[in-house]
Image (cartoon, rainbow, N blue to C red; front, side, top):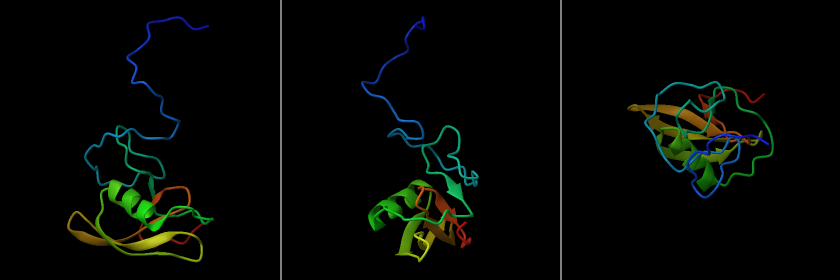
Length: 112
């Protein structure tokens, strides 16, 4: 059994890889598949993972927006199971998507 001074409690726990309900500013960088430290943004990648995607269009849009994109348009699920569309970020339009692992895809990379 471990001993020590317990920290403050919030009445619940967060599963590994899950994020809290707080938000922070967008750093504007690609994180190579991991959420940026100190943020709750979804992981981003330029190479999506192909697979059966259970995210709804609304969930895909929300995750893309949480990664710092606005005006998400034309979301369609492609034949590899990746949600793809266009969105604005830092005043520029970009190709975006969401793979089945919940990673936000930047660009139009081919699924692995």
